[in-house]
Length: 324
Image (cartoon, rainbow, N blue to C red; front, side, top):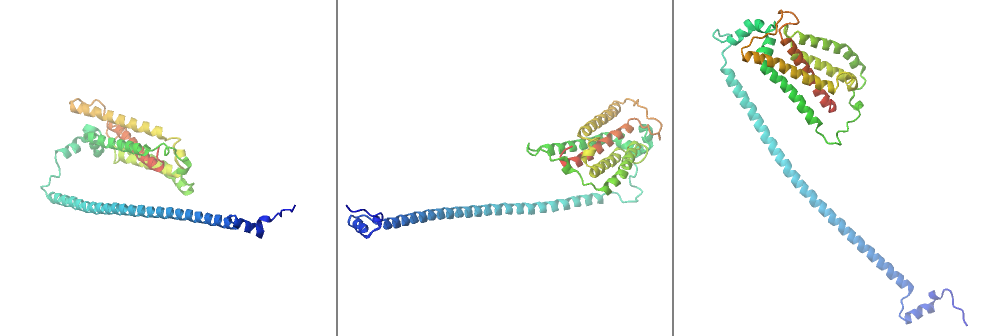
């Protein structure tokens, strides 16, 4: 019995036998499989390329549509800006024309027939010291004769500070996580800190002097409060909020603002009630020229100064770090 060779499949006789039996040679099958695999791969690549081309076409279409929309929006914005500028210029010239016409109707300067003095001015000058106790006629006019208007101005300051606080604090929960306070602190500027150590006490003392002597000399709550507010801003800018908050933090500011406004309204309400009902003012006016004189006007200056100083520092703190 003959022995079968190990490489019989690769012999010539084996290939002839497979050809007679209708079988394909192994190499031919491998070539077909390889060609089929290559065809499928090329087909997949063609499908992939078609997909990429479709995506690119879609992106180009979307980009084109976005450009068209953006062009339309820019065109509308440019049209709006053009109309806005034209209306702004027209409004400015209209206001200028109205003011010029109004000025043309004013009495000429130096004319002896001009109404230089009338009953109101005469009353303020001649009876101001007697009725208000203030040596400074302007302070008596603002805080007594025109007290209702001045109280409205103080309310405007309070409402403005409150509105800014509400707007800046109306943020999402994510934005409420305030960054480290150190990020809002100034750099250690030695020159600024040394200058602040000298200037801040002087500014505070002069501001207090202007407030407390507002009924005796030019000044009062508005100008003195602005000075104290500027001193507080200078101190915070030089040493940072961490040191400022030790004495003047958000809680103290709220108490000071609300208390000053309530006391101011209560003081003027007394004047309104007595004046409207013809009741005599029983609060002593004191000796004109003394520090503690002019009745409630001395205290009203303090209330107004506190309100102005707190409002100035509140605006600075809110816009600097977003909170008190």
